[in-house]
Length: 88
Image 1 (cartoon, rainbow, N blue to C red):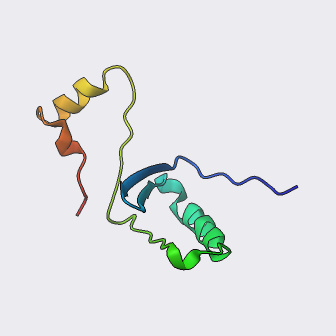
Image 2 (cartoon, rainbow, N blue to C red):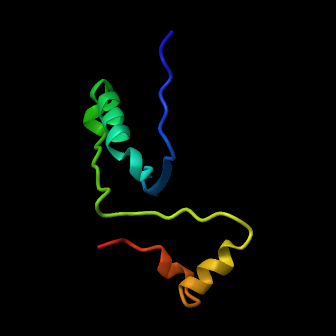
Image 3 (tube, rainbow, N blue to C red):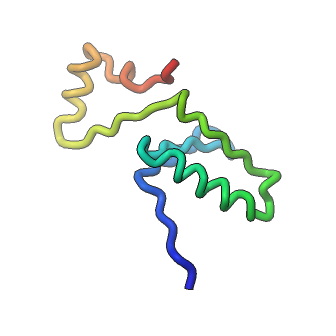
């Protein structure tokens, strides 16, 4: 029996046709990317798949609860979409 693998707090977003952005828990980036690369290395069609660690370019904050919309509106001066943008 093979051991199970776990990726901690990973969010996957489809950002285009055959293009995905994975947001990985910051405390696990190195371990999770290493695991993905090890699996990619054995993938039969790996020439069709590209993995790039662009963690220095993007970040995420997870907010939960019934008052999230109010909080985001308050902290973003009424423009919650400003909270979600590419970090430079």
